[in-house]
Length: 88
Image 1 (cartoon, rainbow, N blue to C red):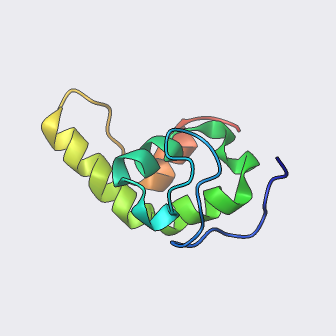
Image 2 (tube, one colour):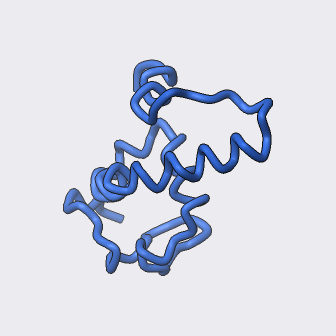
């Protein structure tokens, strides 16, 4: 499948994974949070751009998960999280 470099929108359809066929705007925020942790997501620039555009929502989800599980590693910001993952 060729990789689309056009940034995805809420109406774009997820091309693979457990939510294949679902519009991006209907993906659970927990799934976007999970996607944001994958170093290889930059290999999918359209999806990566969409996830980046939802950064605020993802941060709120991380905060919610951390509140539920205080033992989880936390970061001051999404950018700190990305930089802590090391080189891509």
